[in-house]
Length: 600
Ligand code: ZN
Ligand code: ZN
Image 1: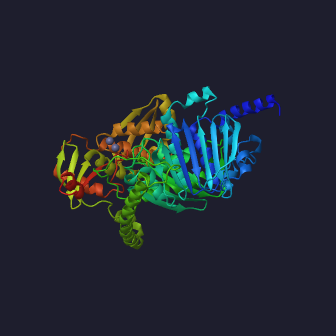
Image 2 (image 1 turned 45 degrees about the horizontal axis):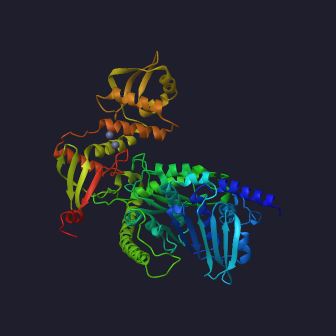
Image 3 (image 1 turned 30 degrees about the vertical axis):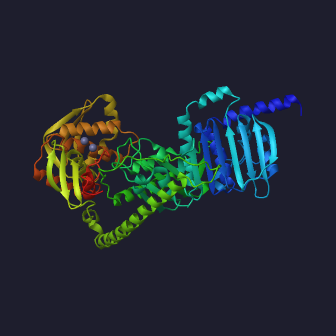
């Protein structure tokens, strides 16, 4: 081979590297997926300076013989590039080895591997094979990639933000740990542990390792199926909300994917339980015939399209909302802030194997988890009995199902009012603070929603008809939706000149505020995006409920408080206002005693 050809190949590798390898995360992903393909049950990812200085991935997989170890870095030898569609048909992660030559072209790589019979060490600098020698090693592979982009300074510039590099690696490893709970993952940066799972094949333990005990306590299992899809996993109580969607993990047939529609269905299921700009924590596995999944051709994005998306939407919405409906969701005032991962110092995996803080840490975490499990087990038994009595009741008189529903919270007795805004209440379990506006809003919202969906609305004639004039752009939209007004119980005439004459209104419309309420409803009709009747009624109920509810700084009487609390208790979801803000906050007896140091 002449010098020129070698130069060409070198250049080609560098160019190709730019396409496949842009961030430290791409290197980590390639190496970790190789480890998974090699049937590893334990994978360690150790970074120095967020991977910018060094990325080391070690596994206990099948390893390679000498020949394969050398070939792994040759572009032409990297055999079978599988098509992306195959990813869902077969269990391999697909691109095995494809990016290794690209990584080696822009870094220093040391590969140590053993298939159990012989060990091999391969060293490559900037794509040039420098050393191949025999070495001994336990079975498995350790690849060390250091000084990424040392020979392509332009690319190196993009790696200057260590936080961004570390964040994307952590996010990726967390998601892999969630998709492979049977594999033990250990992620460290500068010898600090960021993730340490135990490979026990239990999803909840991985959630515990990633999000900590406070979050784990507030996760509920879901499982449901229809003809096309099966979903399972864990979702958080609404109080465990996040500011972004990073804590929503979706897997399809065992692979983490991105799909904005599915994320939206999950968030929609939390509608009125959570403010619209907040996101739950969720780990959801979707099992589906691969024929129904279409994969977007970009290896790093993993975006997919589902056929029969409506069936999936229906399954997610009904499963999550029925799960939330069964929970008691009063946030605890003593709730700690959510901690993520932990940063205990760790002895190096590849160095001495002395008993380290890491081992201690695992023991402590396991202990913590076992305690929690014992507790939740006894809770589950109790809940099961409840469900049995509930089902018995509901089957005996199906027609009155709605009315007969057991209240989801215990009775609370008012004690006083703070700032004309918060009701203080008590019962045998503890003390409660209730936001009077939010509570009233919830009561009114459920009432309006029920009235709105009544096919034969109750109406009342106005003594003086109301005339409403509209600008032409609104009038055009309104004309198309006049049937909505009829459905709601309005009777009116088109008065000409873009004017409606309203003679009859639904009975529920707040008295004395009819015109304002009608204006609001018109606003909603003319502004709502991708219109549906359910969405429309929901908007109307929430808007009118807010207008019609007691405000803050309104000093209501104790009788009013009593009525408010008992009506709140009768609500389907007494825990949040229609905008997702909490209505009740609790101080349990234990929490009160703890606060006053009567109990430790
Ligand atoms: Zn409001
Ligand atoms: Zn509200």
